[in-house]
Image (tube, rainbow, N blue to C red):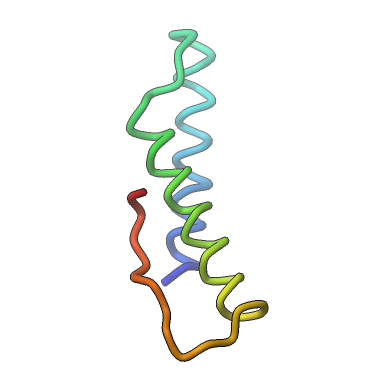
Length: 63
């Protein structure tokens, strides 16, 4: 799942680059999506490699 989210975040970053180029603004929805994917990736990596425990917080793309 994280692989597909990362691919879609890459596509969203390309769209955001063009949006910034033409409008001068970063679309908030694309920013929130990419930020959520990065946060989810960090959460997965932390619990997979650093915080080996039986209790895991819920994973979501929102803060």
